[in-house]
View 1 (spheres, chains in turn orange, purple):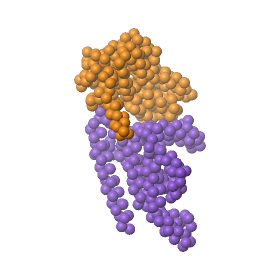
View 2: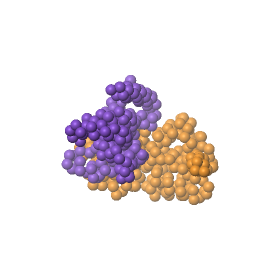
View 3: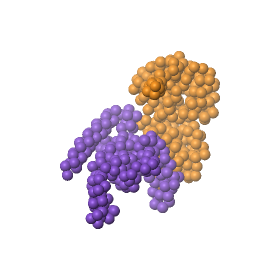
View 4: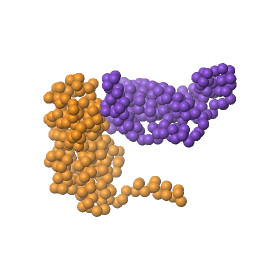
Length: 245
Length: 223
């Protein structure tokens, strides 16, 4: 008897219900997509949104290796371009749905750098940025720092994070004195971090979304993408500080 | 072999060795303290001390971050008195790895101490040995093989430490990025060639260590 229950427990989670839509979204979309998912579910009874948040490159890697993902939303065009090149997304479904800004943050009690160059000061022993090899926010930051001829100079101070939210957490905990995150991320930890400045990026921070080629529920996936782009979806994104694409 | 892989390998060996030494001292001392009699309180204490092995490494990492961090009570104290912070340092990685690994030594040590013939310890006492002498000259040498086996498992656990290390020490290339972290980063960055070279190095290191361990335990048996 006991063994039979154990067997059931082991086997049940492996069978996703018919309309489980797996949405792999950039870490910076954690809060907004959780809410959009709930609102979508309320309008489409029976459909179930399963959200998977991580750095965009990590998500793409999972998709390339055959993860059963239906919708992919990345934090930069570059990662989505790579997904398109490797034929992992339905190109016709691709659409930019939001934009964001890169900001330099410091702890609430820390000294604000007046300009990017001030980061070279000893006040900023640790500067958290997403690892540019796998995190779009880190690539935007590297781009800006390279343009300011600071990238090589502050190399010893840089603490690479696994995704943008980890960079935010390092600053919120005071372990890093400064960090580069999106404006929307800084907003979620308002009581612990302060925005010192908005960092101009030569590549605009835009979020594309698309249905994957391997999606088993392409219709439901398309409906979700449409919902993100609808007035309802856009209102939620706006609430969390995202701008229109 | 590229230098890309050598740096994380050396760092991993350094961190794992130091963590094993630290874990051995603490594990043996606590194993002795728990003693040979299995009372309820002592078993509860042993269970609590085994938690780092059972808990997800991220839970361990979170608590370490909270305690050792700038605002944590140990972290704040270290900062105030010594001006040091363990977060983002290889020393922090050693602490994370030793806490994750020490229950393996504790368990092995307690079991080995229980197996030591009490009459031999009493014989040492009757010959005038102090309790410290009894421990270092009779109990420890007799229990040594079991403890060594535990220490080798602890070393393996320390070498593979990932979650807690990532949270406490970060993944700073050349500074705190151990092999397991470097492999993860390489895979996530899509650099399969670099990941593979490090995976092969890990495999070789593991096989060499296992053979070395088998030899060491074999020799202990004969003496």
